[in-house]
Image (tube, rainbow, N blue to C red; front, side):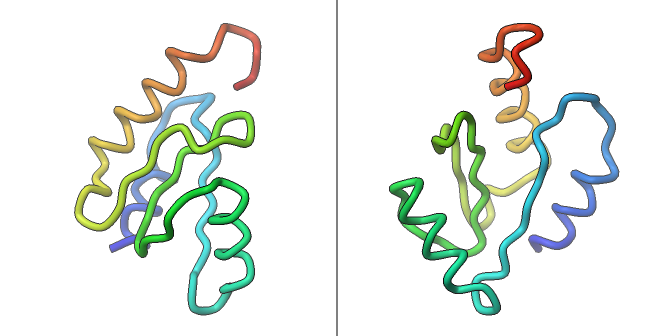
Length: 87
């Protein structure tokens, strides 16, 4: 599921979209643990987290990871970012 979402996101258009990074939890447990620690979040897999200024501002997991929900989160991300600030 996560791989197909990543492919659709990367294939989409729209300048200024936040970059997408995928951490494979089993293969990269220390990275996953550090993300959970630094963002003060509960880990779920699969999980999508939108980070702004080093803080988790939105997250969802499992079957709520949809193209529509991702687009809504990105739109909200941009509506909170002043023009020219670079997010």
